[in-house]
Image (cartoon, rainbow, N blue to C red):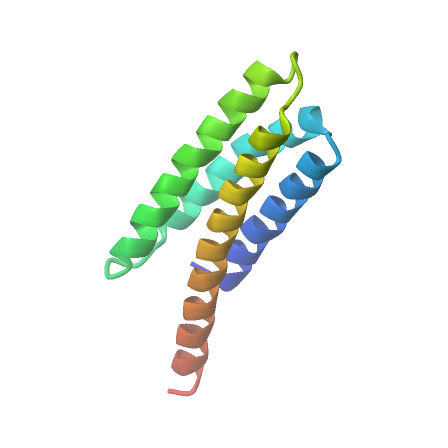
Length: 115
């Protein structure tokens, strides 16, 4: 797994949060599937000893599915401010996990380069 893959996922999360903030729900929901696929790809490439990260990212992928379902259901009626806050908090948590993994990966990559 490359740090750049994690950075792409982080960037996509940031885009989705911006779309949420701007009430662009139709556009946001189009990115959930891509984000799930990215998380699946990252999970598959986690090293064996990264069990905790794999579990957190698997939970994150489930959260993305739940967000997608909520937005698709509520988009007709309008998204409540509480839902928007919860969606963005979930995305913040996922983003934080990805940033932590990217930090660990970046450190590991720089260590291997010096060997």
